[in-house]
Length: 516
Image 1: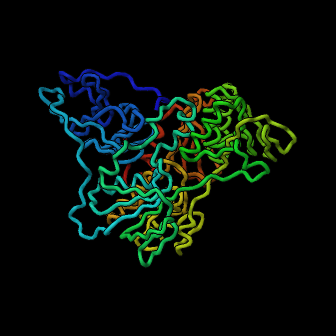
Image 2: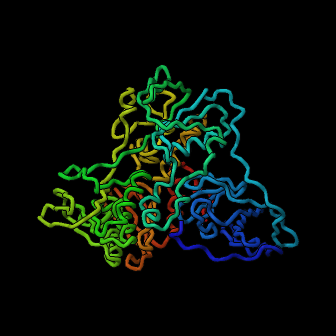
């Protein structure tokens, strides 16, 4: 929200436009009154849908058409051109949809229609009697909604001790922490949404699972039965285990409660030390600097994002931070913290009234492990996201699933991946039997520099760079044994979308679905 640039106004469609204006498969920016519209020509058909993504308002006219879908260039939300339905997260709401008519060689919009629901599964009789979801973050909330969108009418219960969830977690380290996103942007759904859709929410923790008896015990002593269970417990931040690491001014950033506590502390602090130079750390550094604090980043790495994006992009982002007043102490570790300073292993003392720790997370798998479900650096699931216990699924940070193409088991700790896994798990709970093949996607934006990343490369042995890194116009390809694993782009959002579509096509075994 608010971070990316908006698209330009489109052509007035009131009197129609010549059909020949539309290029096959390329989004065309139009306008009806003040409302942006995208026209897409596919063979003999012309589609007309809303031009603003319902996630953060990205310009769909600058996106990519893949088959009968259009994808947002900002965060890769995917919409049906036929119905306007939000097919893939992070968008959850549909876009408007118009009927079109071609008369005398001109395309006319002849009436707006409501977005059609997804294909109903009401004809099935083997639905689970009830569905329990443990965790209401990205994966859990997306799954609960998808169950209803797919036509499931049985009981859906979401269990989570975080009474604020679900909320826009990626924004906690970005605009919200920076003071640029209002409070109303943070909840994913308005008050009353879940009650309206018959989704029960229980604000307590799950204590144990009985896979054979299909029951779950809650921390308050209640026992609930389930027909199917989705584990979406997420992860917890790694704490800094040094003397003083538990002092009151040392903060983690994971929940909305955490973020609010950091904001309160920042109001009276002048100097902050951020421990960790990956996504949470670097985004928090930019946000706190935006609030006027003196900020120093400490990490053992030689360059930020060293293990995620590599040194090439890491150096660009580091220079960008330095130009905006952020200081770095890299190649260093924290030795201890006291009330007024952070002490490093080389004897350096960094005065600080606030310390934010972002050094990684660990998956919350104990509930599954205690139940005898197979766990190994995550809950082991098959391509349908089902665990070793029949009828029990896992999604999000805790799910370790077979990667498309390679079959290598991976675990991805990113928001959009968790949402899409939750949606896929919901469909498979209802018998869809659709393998999860979506490539991982994440984004970050710091000081106006946006990075989009698609794919998964825990390690690579070759990097191919196209474009100009210093001009923020580049794409970086990460390869291992000659095979492309991931692509990161800066200033080339459309290329990142194309890479995602190509990876999907390769995973499905089909051509790239009419990518233009």
